[in-house]
Length: 244
Image 1 (cartoon, rainbow, N blue to C red):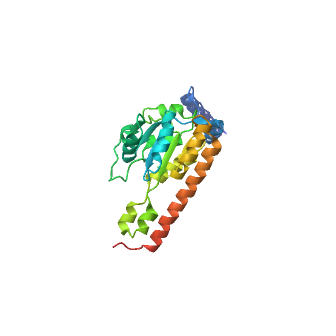
Image 2 (image 1 turned 90 degrees about the vertical axis):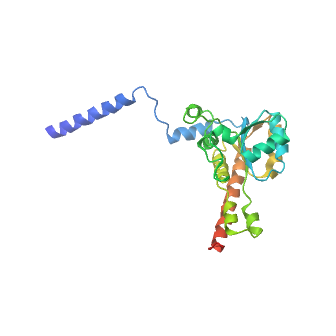
Image 3 (image 1 turned 120 degrees about the vertical axis):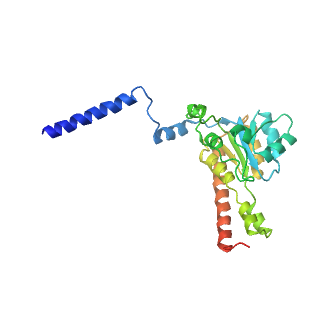
């Protein structure tokens, strides 16, 4: 009996010790907190910050002109930023490498895969405010992601070499699109220049905002697009087991 009482006493001391360590501290966020925060995001959301990295720049000037009317700031990869500055006077454009503090490198293989970009795309508005302000994060909410992927199938269709095809496999683009699409409760993700006009109509109809329904439909297209993209790559690998 004495041994049992001693064990219980040690357990109570341990509980009190843990309680003293956590006293005055906010409870750690739970999965349920994240779900509830997502449900509380408003239907209509304005677009203030857009991240853009596009291979196909068709009609990008039309979209950028419209977004400029609503005071949207662009964060863009080098080639996209140069194009945007050349086609829209007065457009607010920040080079993505200047924003992240990390230069594009590995011959263009590494551009958007950075915590400041992914955090901004995945953060839930009104819930992750303090997290984004932390010095080790120092990111802003991203409202709009505009990405179109490297033309892998076109490269294959032109009879490119094995390693030319490999270099046409987009990594950062799908990752950013998928992050934005997952967080469509907060972020609009556009993966096809053909949808620029739809976004423009949405913004004009809602005074610079997008609705949840529009963002959800954009997310659906993103996952369809990235699935087809991966399927094409996998099919190519099945047929190309050796390089020249």
